[in-house]
Image (cartoon, rainbow, N blue to C red; front, side, top):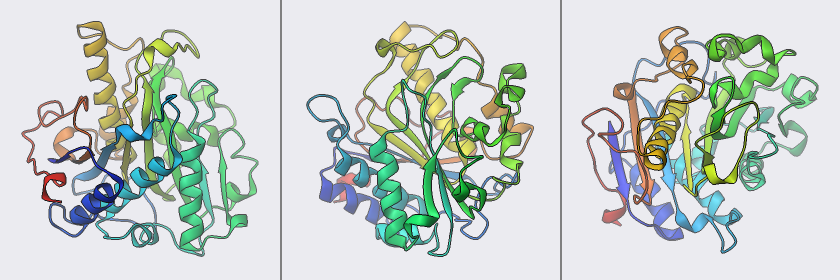
Length: 323
């Protein structure tokens, strides 16, 4: 199912558009598993909602991210995701003041999780009432970080990019640092990365998945391959409770960009099959577009995904034009 809010949004309209969606003008509330988190290894019975939001204003004149727009986009996406009118209420439906929260980021030097996005999440955790000593951001040090060792909740956040061993660096894959020997998950194109989500430090704790699509990397060959020619200013975030569904949406966007850039169907150097297998083999979430409730907010031009692209006859309604 596709729900479309195609318009270029000012700050006021961005927030109001998400509020209208959350109020039920377009969307019904998402199912939020705030008590046990997501990623428990049980696929949701109902379609998984993914909110895709884009805003060209997120880049300043030099191409750097504007932190205030990053915050607005994150709040608007979370508000639409959980069906609340106000951002703080939306975050409170996901995180409790008594939680110990680890923000699992990604520190790959060429395309790390933007600091402005990490700070936006940290700020909202503080607004909810989680004190500074019970929230932390980490990637490669999670097995040594005391906050992650006693975490009751996780927020999973990383950029989308191609990846030598897994096809794409995804939200599913982002938990690979919770094992002492990550290469043990590399065989067969990292087919069984979903097993990471059953680890004791992870299982049932993930409250929110945030895929950064500000400047995704759509092509690369070889370990740690990077070239800025294969980045583009997409200016987006994809947010959901189901990591498989969010990754599936991100993958379709990368596939569309590859068709646009190369002029043909260009397979990834390594097939990113771990996303589909997280659904069909491991039951972690929904990869099939027919079981993803895709809500699209913000800029439509260059979105690269639509009802047709998602593989379903989408039901489209515009939030933005009702403002």
